[in-house]
Amino acid sequence: MMSKLIFQSNNSLHVGDAVFVPLISQQEINAAVRDVALKIMKSKLNEPIIIGVLQGGVYFQNLLEKHLFHMGLDFESDIVGLSSYGDSEVSSGDIELYQHCSLPIDGRDVIIVDDIADTLLSFQALRTVLSAQNPKSLNFIPFLKKRGTALVEDFELMCFGLEIDPLFVIGFGLDYKKIQETRKLRDIYYKIE
Image (cartoon, rainbow, N blue to C red; front, side, top):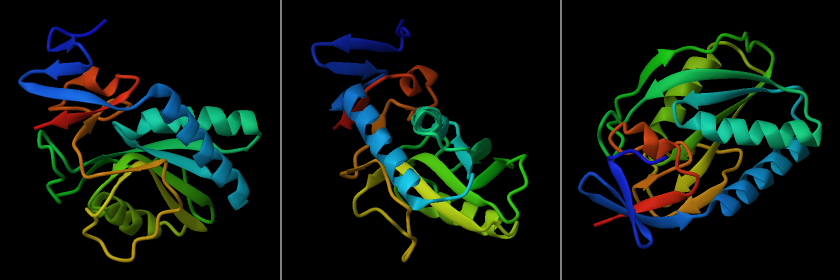
């Protein structure tokens, strides 16, 4: 059931005064996540800890872990709370870590998954915090990677689900102005100007 804040018209979603149109279908999302799972399986990481970044990254984390479970990978799960957007459509660059992971990562292979990578400042901040805990490896995987928006040079991603133009997107964990219903959309939509 859609909120009164969101209504559908033809092939678009109206959220407040913004209009969004389809970009990536649920089927394409599932296929891309399965491809990421296959890449992880080929990487030969040893019983990794998969850490999802709250809030949007847990949608990707959940689907990825389902695929990995069915592929037979042993792993543990954890989450971290990180914010850099607030109510804005662009990352503020101010990274707030409001929840630390609960599992010890010393000597472990770690995979950090998030909904989207644009500036890479969030991943850089997490790398700094988590590196101090002496993991065997840190591997960063966003579901979406925006083209040409990175502010951090030479940051290596293990892989990513899909690459998109620098659009503002909602769905599959990504929200608009903290409207939770936009996170729950099964497809990904982009905002038209």
